Image (tube, rainbow, N blue to C red; front, side, top):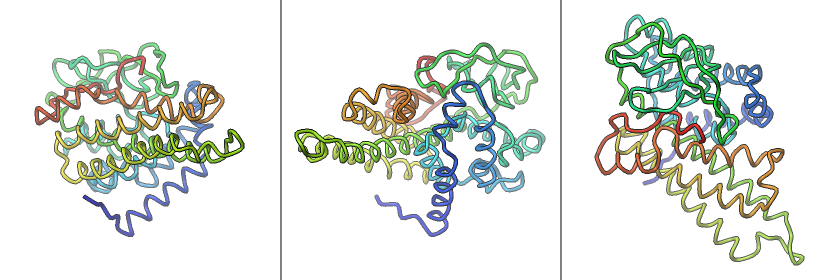
Length: 332
C-alpha cells in the first residue's frame, strides 16, 4: 500500500522540519538530559503553536479534532530530530482527559497550545515510572479507583537514554475519572511512538549514509564496499516497509494494527541503530558525538508503550487491553 500525502500534509511536515532544523535540537536534548527545561519548554510551546498537540484534541478545546494520520506525520519529524519530552504521553493524556465536559475544558486547551506538558503512569497495570514525571505540569496516574491527578513525583531514575528521565508518580491526588479509556489512550500513544521511532530510524540511516560516504579505507569511501551497501540496503528496506504500516494503522486506528506498526517501526529503527553503530565504529559510542542521541532513543522507544513481545501478543490476540508499558523499563 502506498500513502500519498496531500499538499496540506506536505506543507505541514515541511514547516515542522524547518522549525526543528532551526531549533538546534541536539543542544536542547543535552539540556533536557541535565534537567534543564528552558530550551525544551520553549520548543514545546513552538510545537504547540504549530498544531502538533492539537491533533489529538477536539476543535472545541483548541485542537484540530482527532487527526491520527497528521499526528503520525508530525511524530516522524519529532523522531527525526530527537525532540525530548513526554511526547506520546501527552497524546495519551489528551485522550484520557477528553471527557467532553469539565476535564476537557480544564486541561485540553493547555495541551493543545503547548503550554501544558503531561505524562502518564499506568501503575495498576504493572507499568513503569512516568516519563519526565518530575517536569510535567499534569501527571496522570492509574489507581484501583480510576485515574488520579498525581500531586508529585519521586526521584528520577537513570535511563539508557539520558533524555528519558523516568520518575515514579506519587499515588495521591485528585481523582479525575473512575473509568478512563486506558486502552484507547494506549493505542494513540503507541501510534505516536511508532511514528517517532520511524523518524529516529530515518535520521540514523541518513547520518550513516553520509558518514560512510566520507570515511575512507584503502583509499576509497567505506560506502563503496559491497558489504556496507548491503547492510544499509537492508535497513532502508525495513524502514520503507515500516512506513506504510504506520500510516495504515493511523487510518484504521485498531489496536491490532497500531501494535503491528509499533513493532515494525521500532524494530526497523533498532536495526538502523545497530547498523549506524557498527559502521561509525568507536566514535558512535561517545556521548559528545550527536549520533548517540538517536542511538539511545531508538533502543528506549523499542520498549516504551509495549515491548516487542507485548506488541506481538497484541497482534496475535487482536487487541491491546492496556498490555504494554507506558514508559518502559527504567533502564530503557
